[in-house]
Image (cartoon, rainbow, N blue to C red):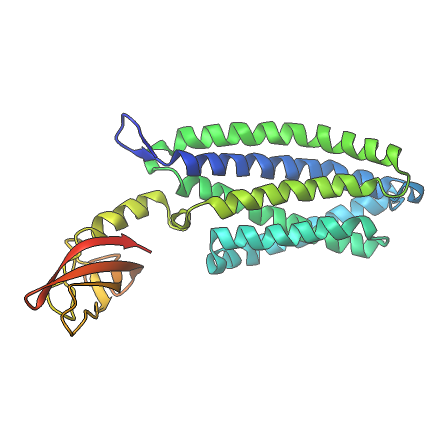
Length: 294
């Protein structure tokens, strides 16, 4: 991590992963916009579906309505339930599956269903990557970081249609029946690279760097005041699970403590932190010597 003159720490490694992810998502999304329609209108001799403009327009319109309903009714609930990283991973695997199967589809209805699944997956990926950008950036630096991220994403979006259309045309010209696979599988390869970026991101990307810093500052002040109890922090955090220190007088032990950080003083609602505390017993009391957030 690098600390800027403003005093706000920037996690450069995590931000780099987020920017690369945003670029890959933009490249894949706009490449898909060209490859799918070209495949639909291509003749069956080269592996396409030989759709008319009316058939293609109807398919895209139906898919747009279904995607809109998913975005408005289900996407936020799924992302909230799974979290940003798990949502990104789950829908990336779904999209990779769609891109792998799609070249073998031969009917209008199957193509429409695959398109709906692909668009819903990409909407989740786009939204999650944008949220990760904000979570990986201190609040005072979000403007400039988002500017860099959007610029890189725009470059990907610019290259997507050019690369996708040319790759599809080249692949069909090389192989009259199997060339269509190349373009779809290349898009799937971009999604695999995005998965690698997500797997490399730290877990605190879920709650944001500002909350992580506040949590670490709070955890650093946790004091144990008895063999089986832990006192509140200066932020009035309430300990929900006591630290069960060794009753046999061990000098060093590792204990999990659950801390509730109330939204307001006296509130039962807030965000919970699991803390691993290594405590040293001192004459019936214990003093925290080292701790870190899980």
